[in-house]
Every structure is written in C-alpha cells, then in structure tokens.
Image 1 (cartoon, helix red, strand yellow):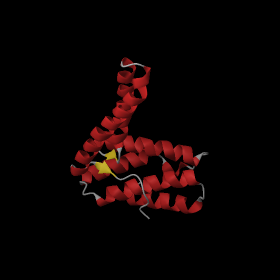
Image 2 (tube, rainbow, N blue to C red):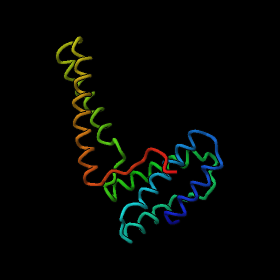
Image 3 (tube, rainbow, N blue to C red):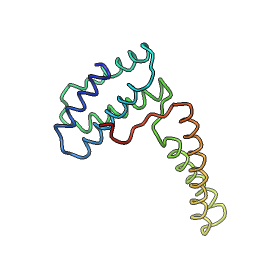
Image 4 (cartoon, rainbow, N blue to C red):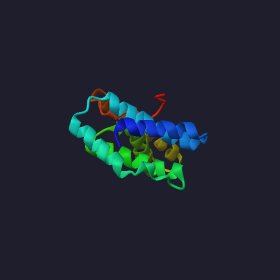
Length: 152
C-alpha cells in the first residue's frame, strides 16, 4: 500500500466508527502518514515506508480492530524511530521525567524518609528540563514526528 492509499483507508475506517479509542488510533495513523507525506523523503525512503505498510496487512479485517491497529501503529512508530531516527513529540520529556523521578526517589531515600517527596519533585523537574532541551534539539534537527492532533 502506498502512503496515500493507507491514509485513505484509515479515513474510511474513521468515518465508520464512533468509538473514541478507535478514532484515536485511526487519527494517529492519519497524522503520522500526513506528516510523512509533507516531508521531503527520497524515493528509497518512501519505498521503505510503503514496504513496511504492506507487511501490516491492514485490510485483513481483524476481529478486534482497535487492538490490532493500535499494535500496528506502535510497530510503525518503532520502525520510523529505528530507520529514520524520527521520534514522537515529547519523547525525551517523558523519558527525562521518568528517569528523574527514579533518581529523585533514590536520592531522596539517601536523605531519609522526609526527603523522599522532595527528591521525587526535584528529580522530576531536572528530568523535565533536560528532556525539554533534548526535544528542542530534535525539533531543530527536524526529527520530531507529529503524532498528536487531528490532521483532518
């Protein structure tokens, strides 16, 4: 399937459902595919993406559509991250906050039980700052793939 055909396929599925979870998955695919179309990709990169889309067997009519397409969306995001170094928005911020909280709890425990919440908060803030900085760097390098919001 081409990128355009896949986008049209998910737009058709979007019109057929009223379930919020399915709508979120379909819009996620549509947004990513639209962003990929707007990028200046080489013919080789486009064919690589289209080959990956073919492996998903999207027209297979699965029993549980939301679960199936949600898994395929996650696989597709991982593929884009591995092959093209494209990350979703807020990627480093989320990682920075979670790592900051982990290290903050560890540091808070070393100062005693009363420092635990302070360590958690400080670690989260430091992780947030570092993550936002890394996200801004990735944005400048045009490696951020918009995955949220409606492209309709």
